[in-house]
Length: 82
Image (cartoon, rainbow, N blue to C red; front, side):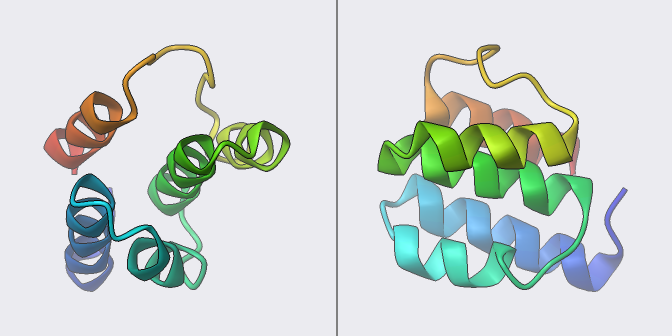
């Protein structure tokens, strides 16, 4: 579970990503060091189409790259878990 400050930042990153503000979201998660941040980071690179980098972040997050086909639904799932 993320600390309240990190949770706010993670929720902001998810909101940016869902609303197609990839760069803003990426700036947030690249500064955070948690499994949740790594997972969001992986989803962002999946959206970007950088599978190699995305799989790296999924591995760090201990999540499955192939579990979700729809990145926005995956972000909504992460958001609900926070």
